[in-house]
Image (cartoon, rainbow, N blue to C red; front, top):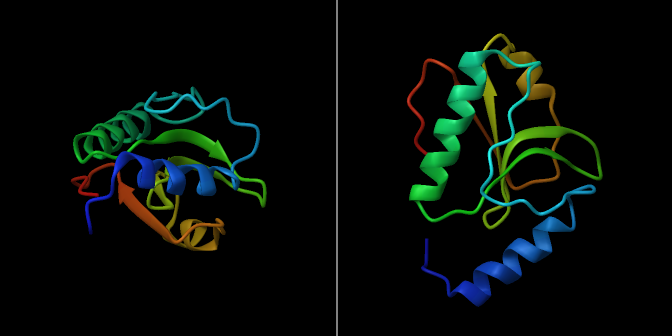
Length: 113
């Protein structure tokens, strides 16, 4: 991918943030949910760390205006990342997000965004 200037990156982020519902713009902060397993939450944190090491801003537990809640959203590239622990592949496949790409990782897999 071509290296973008910070201004170009911010323009992409701003455009994609229009899809997000009522978010307080706390970028690069991992939100944990007690409804998820410890394994799920630790893998989510690992994925966020990987995103940050690769230079991406991220949001967690994002709700979209068109419906759906994503574990992680990378607004610059318009990707959703879902962590699967007890969730089935079919359940993941049925999720519909208004994004370019959906990535999934099981809690026992290595994260590589």
